[in-house]
Length: 159
Image 1 (tube, rainbow, N blue to C red):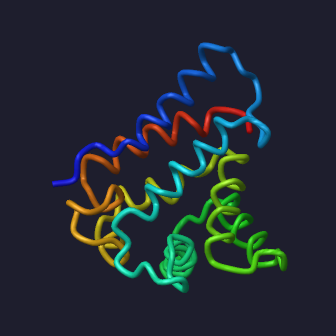
Image 2 (image 1 turned 135 degrees about the vertical axis):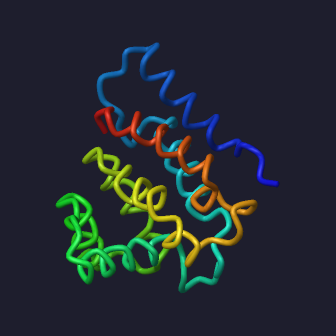
């Protein structure tokens, strides 16, 4: 059984620090931002079905875009712009770097909640990429809701 991940505590601590210290803008020089991004990345990786170097959480973000286009569903413009930006960035050599850039881009625009809420509302999509719910936050019915709430709170902050 998957317990509440320690990364939730890191995200909560960041949120509390920002509110208590009345931080107006979070930037890359702050250690809390690095810790936050590492926690998010770790949660995205937790329980991935194929953890090889060629398949990472960035892969399901690419697949999400394809799926939304095929279904002619709503694609948030910031999500689309993030993927285009990552694809065009020639300095990103591997899928891990692309995933990290996606996290930063979506945090800066307050839209990291878009792909998480999609996973929350479409568990069959999450199941394609993540193992049994006991192994993954994004495939776990309750933990994905908590994660989505934490990320929604982060999306209200200025990066």
